[in-house]
Amino acid sequence: GENVEQHPSTLSVQEGDSAVIKCTYSDSASNYFPWYKQELGKRPQLIIDIRSNVGEKKDQRIAVTLNKTAKHFSLHITETQPEDSAVYFCAARPAYSGAGSYQLTFGKGTKLSVIP
Amino acid sequence: DGGITQSPKYLFRKEGQNVTLSCEQNLNHDAMYWYRQDPGQGLRLIYYSQIVNDFQKGDIAEGYSVSREKKESFPLTVTSAQKNPTAFYLCASSVGLADGEQYFGPGTRLTVT
Image 1 (cartoon, helix red, strand yellow):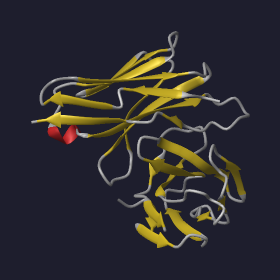
Image 2 (cartoon, rainbow over the protein chains, first blue to last red; image 1 turned 90 degrees about the vertical axis):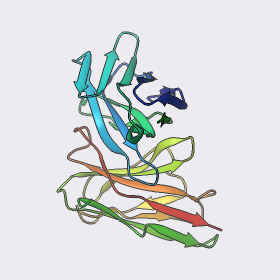
Image 3 (tube, chains in turn blue, orange; image 1 turned 135 degrees about the vertical axis):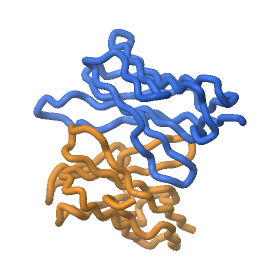
């Protein structure tokens, strides 16, 4: 099955600096890579996702890059703000082929702290 | 915060008792999921259901059971066979099993003593 490794487990940055979180995956059949943000005591919420036919996707201060050859993808947050403080999870899911589980496999999370 | 709901928010049980966690969605989604979240462990899949009256085991199904009698509902029972049941439980749904975003409920924190 799929295995997703996420680094670092904790990350502290000064407000205004950039933050980068990296994930690697093992299953070359994976083609969908979402990122979820979970604030303390709240539900995870999708912040950005990328599919394997795209190398990079941006949404305002957030971007995700994907390297299918190396099987890794990264979340980039620029101009960080205190409200970016949360736990971020990456995940991977295989492409639909008519059989299989298609479950999302999650990384263990990165706790991001933005220091004012 | 409508769409997918879980109840109760906090649940306390004595060891040896079965307990059922509720999950309801009004998004007309076919697929539903149960995850367990422990500190430093990420989200681990317990069970999932692609369609009514069908469900599959996830990575950590032992000690849990589910049912999917209605499209809107996917209750999870934590049985006395689950050795370490204290955790935060999250329900999620998506349009289809291999289709886009999973929407999460607010979660139930279960404490078993």
